[in-house]
Length: 398
Image 1 (spheres, one colour):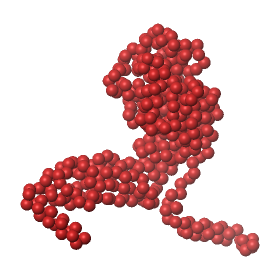
Image 2 (tube, rainbow, N blue to C red; image 1 turned 120 degrees about the horizontal axis):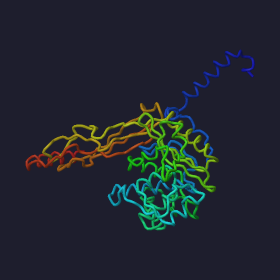
Image 3 (cartoon, rainbow, N blue to C red; image 1 turned 60 degrees about the vertical axis):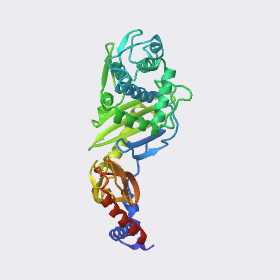
Image 4 (spheres, rainbow, N blue to C red; image 1 turned 90 degrees about the vertical axis):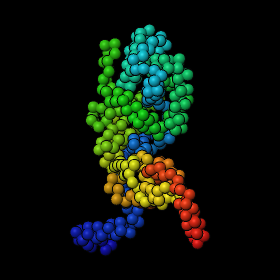
């Protein structure tokens, strides 16, 4: 009732003051954690993750099991890349295109195809291009037959690799993603295989950024629309079946930060691109990924060593500590250094002697080993005896 008789200007000042008081009354950690909500995404399931850290920035139904469609081909090409890297096959190995590959995935089918000619020979690297860019079912089947003798045996390799990558909600039945009862995946699992492709095979990941590939004088475009719309996007893969709907796993890099979005079950080709773009834009606008501590950086110096030829040593970290956090919250990061109570020689360079814990607003973000910077040999007998005496009386009075 009082508001009703106040001038409009006075009302605004009063409302602003009330809002400010509410913010001040809010716990500091709560206020610091406030970030905009993720956008509404028109899809059955989706997830947005940082490619470097694996931090999930937003998700919905990310563990719901759904048909993978052609996104299954990401695992097919990942396994082929593994085989090349291990030296078991070569890029220029020629693969005989079987009648089976042509009949199930070739030009006479309704599915996506590389337009391979039956009984021709095509190099492994060209088939990789055909799977990634053209989403060729015939190329995926040909690679599966080349590596394992057939799709059934190859799908066993796919499932084993999925287990190794922690893809707990995924089960493969073929190399193509063509509909098969029991073949499922999740948005979260697809983010894992995308991260693995980017991390483990950067040379072959570059194929995902190519907009066209030509085989048999037929030039086909990459079906990932974002490659044309956003220059920061350089992968990964589209998929579509009637049951799966329109799906897209995309990745983009800006400001040394790479994000992966997974959108499953969108209503159209245009929709999957639009919803993926919304997710990527949200992530880049509201989050940062930075190296907080560099590998071999000195974390704690002059740590006491007992029984050693050196009295002190420095502790470092073996790998970069990289974190993803809401933009503007870096100042709220805190580090906690935990060192073993008694560090005794001999000590080997790289030996774990403590932990470095980094938290954001009291929430633990990362916990990594602190390691010895140098080797420390045992001291001579007299020095060790003196240390033993000091330790004995220290423990006695503590």
